[in-house]
Length: 85
View (tube, helix red, strand yellow):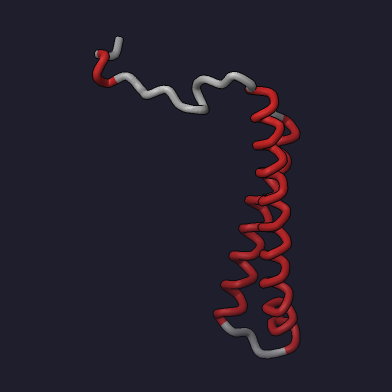
């Protein structure tokens, strides 16, 4: 057992009067931000892919592509986990 001075404070995540309504709003917000993140990653990655395909390779373009792919995977997993959870 935890001593009383070490107990966690009550917050929105531990107690809620309307958990279903908050959860639905939270899911919409997360889904929207994930799709915006995917769009921005693609927007930044497309010019770097074009330069890699048409010009001699540069480190900056390779880094942009690898970070863009990582962000797309991250946000895709967020959207998939929302549907399952």
